Image (cartoon, rainbow, N blue to C red; front, top):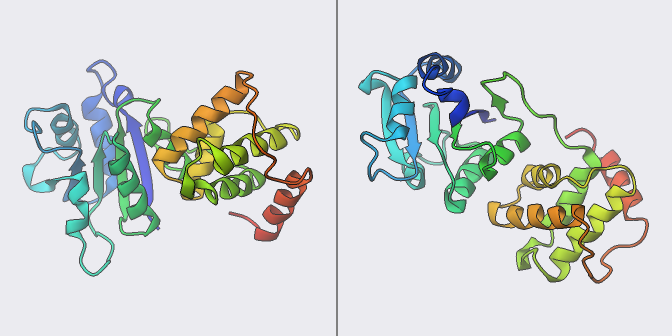
Length: 245
């Protein structure tokens, strides 16, 4: 199983006062070098902020090998997990984030540290959904409630045609309302984390976040009934049958 950790860029730098100490903390967590550093693009990498991050973690050039995120798959041989720890540098594009999520899901990466450009970025929400360790605080976010994960599975089951309209939108709206009636917060990040936790994509996660935000703000979405009135009890029973996640 892949071990995950992260830190935001601001927590790493702290206005130029903490890069060395935080780099050491990250290096100690990653373990023995060499490390593979995966950057969104090699263009402009020399002299870049990404290079500065890597150098703070692995100062010796022999301790680092740098590739583009989309070329990580070239490092695998016969679907065997990559033995070297990986540093992923400020991923943002959906294609890069989805690739990282797939490699983690398929257990092709052993130990991965992600430098997150900003706390608000979707990759940070995904990392929290995976219960990654925030190396700045030393903590990890608790898993979503089992009934919420069951609701997220139902939403994921509708995402093949998108979630912004039709059955996908109806699933989100009705399930958020149903769980809210039983005390579950109408919280965009909470629902997005649950969707990520069951294997949801970054593209559809953005729609989940958008719709839940609108519901919280009071938007009255008109959707066709997708579930029976007792859907909460059905989800709760499924969660109890499936046991601990």
